[in-house]
Image 1 (cartoon, rainbow, N blue to C red):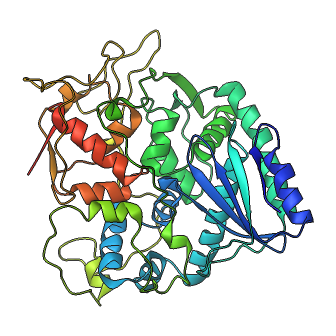
Image 2 (image 1 turned 180 degrees about the vertical axis):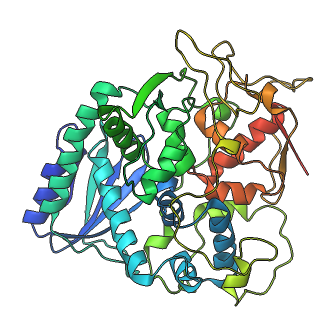
Length: 430
């Protein structure tokens, strides 16, 4: 028996309980503004989940927990592309994480994917009876009662958080040093708090969901360690996409959720976004590396393997700093990075604007972007948080494909942003 509807008329808790009571086997598809998620059931129990949200994919999840850095994620994904070994197994092989830790994190990631839906204001759903993925998954195999209880608890907590943090554009500032023994994930988030980044920007910088960052800031506000420094000016949500022809929407579920964490089936088709990036000029193929420790070494002369860390690379050098809406707001220092300017309405046009509706040039995934303007000038540009994230990752060494891989956005959107940034004269390619 199939069921479909809207979360406004049937709450997620009721829906999960109905599927559990009916001992259903199949896939629950939930679509909302953030993206699409799928929850897999077997005999009324949740076995796993998947998501089109890039920030919920395994690699970014591990970056958010401080197990690996963005640079190491890029290199591990290169190994994966050549060797056809799943990312999780590569990280186990090079010592970044133990296999039992990885299995626990994959289960946690699957559960977090479901908890996030409880915070959605609205969305549509449909249950596909009897349809489950053919590939084996790292199963949660849990009763829905525990998921419902935790999801409802987070919903209630989210309502409390919103009494002090009504919008993710709120900018927190540390006023009293935090001496408590924080976990590695929270330490990394706290490192990104500088009195100029908004909560949504901190979440992007650290690859964490808004809920976790907002909850940490809320708790530190209650203890007097954090106060609110202002609010980031609201910017248009999609200035980058205005001049593009609509493309056919594709699902991009995390391929790392499937399989046994050891191998990628030979018959598995490439992920849609990976196929898009592959359309650029192909470079010479190199043999699949066998010495993973050597490939993922930290520097030219280092052979050290990865280890779990709570504080990855400093975030100040690549911060996305907003303009603060507050009575006495000091001017941002020249070293500050990017943020929106209230007076500006859109990205500045190039010196010679192209004719209306002129199609933008395609961006090669192997091209290396470089900034064409000094950082102090870019500070006044009206970048949205996603645009600022992309610009902050341009270091003259990473190519478009590498930046797309570490971005918490679909790769097709990243390509569009690069196209618009080039047209606006912000970047060029070498």
